[in-house]
Image 1 (cartoon, rainbow, N blue to C red):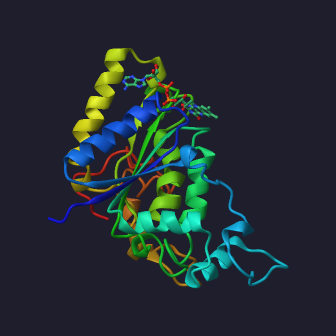
Image 2 (cartoon, rainbow, N blue to C red):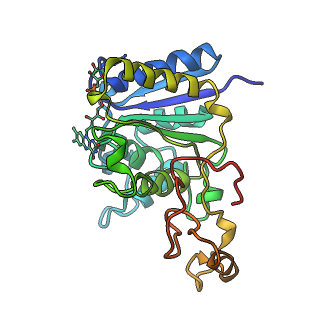
Length: 278
Ligand SMILES: Cc1cc2nc3c(=O)[nH]c(=O)nc-3n(C[C@H](O)[C@H](O)[C@H](O)COP(=O)(O)OP(=O)(O)OC[C@H]3O[C@@H](n4cnc5c(N)ncnc54)[C@H](O)[C@@H]3O)c2cc1C
């Protein structure tokens, strides 16, 4: 089998952080398995996190009413995007798997990672209006969120004070990654490493190392297939009536997002199902 390429989009300021350790374990383990590993160390690169007109070289299509997605779509097709975006596009194009390694900030990605997504997952490159979800332009690639938290796992349980982590993960995994077509692998969550003992931290890194050995072969999480929706303008891309009918007798909704007013399917955004029907 041809060697796989893995891109690690890494965001932490400190090389002595737990995030740096998780990134280093990934580099070492995947390299030892024969993968080509590329790291985008966003803070070290001084990666620009804000989407602006500076991302486009040459004349704007409509300088009176600047629309980022429209202008970058045109600039992508005409090879007029800024050099830093083009460099990241080259890395993504090579990658079979992207690992996003970051500390959880305000229930989300740090701004520098969100900025990478806003600027690098360009319309025309990662998706088009016709190519989203199952047909997203990144559908042959896998992606995984690997992140640390400050809070313990109990706070992110369905009865915890922070709320169900599946709800937190839905916009990050469905709204960005699955939207672009990525096959999203179960997230790697390091719960509260700063409050863990040295032996617990060591065990967390060893578990990550063990998972990395089979990561590229893992089954992705379950999302509702685009085929289940009526994509006509009239229907407004809602679930087909027959699908809703099927789920009417089920105890759970379809996904965390398409919950149909029912209890959320347990672990929908944290574990890949053994028998994925969707
Ligand atoms: C703006 C902001 C918003 C935040 N929002 C949230 C939020 O919404 N929810 C939430 O839960 N948290 C939140 N946090 C907390 C944040 O997620 C945690 O502080 C962060 O995830 C901890 O990861 P770290 O890599 O920085 O840990 P570090 O503090 O760098 O590391 C933890 C421990 O691991 C040790 N370590 C380093 N390398 C190794 C190694 N090789 N082996 C063993 N141990 C090692 C370190 O020495 C340290 O003792 C927020 C923080 C900020 C700044």
